[in-house]
View 1 (cartoon, rainbow, N blue to C red):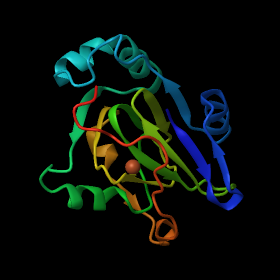
View 2 (tube, rainbow, N blue to C red):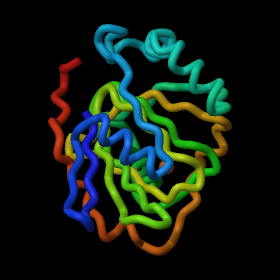
View 3 (tube, protein in one colour):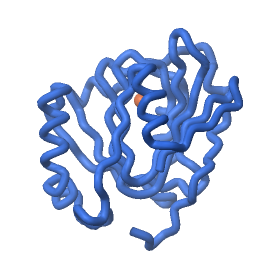
View 4 (spheres, helix red, strand yellow):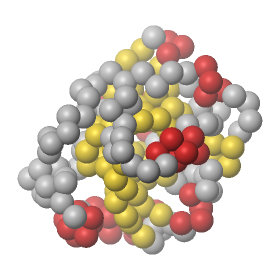
Length: 185
Ligand SMILES: [Fe+2]
């Protein structure tokens, strides 16, 4: 279950409908897809993509995405720090960043043009779409575990374009929800 925090307003939102409305006002899509009753979130990537084909196809039709994959990150993933360092600094993309979390968690910070920076901690079952051009950065939590479906309009579009203002340095990725426990579904 996602958690939104707005540090400048010491505000926290945990109700999914409120989160959806808060994000929609700021141009981000949020949804929750069924989990265990659809497929084992630990299943092979091929089975995951087949199980969520209806949702993925709808997103492809709506958002012009052409491919989907499953990213699997664990504490022991080789080169994890280098990978995280690419995305934990404020950046934009030339295409929407769409992620459906299957296991684990992570924190997106969003820096909107006309409202304070806010964070979204995503958990299993949460779908988030960060529109192209939105300033944001991403961190894992201390458990360093996330498994997620990613959608791409063009894999080269997912290159980060950095904004060298150092805004991200003022925010700690505070993880508030339940931690990932290895072996859980
Ligand atoms: Fe990004």
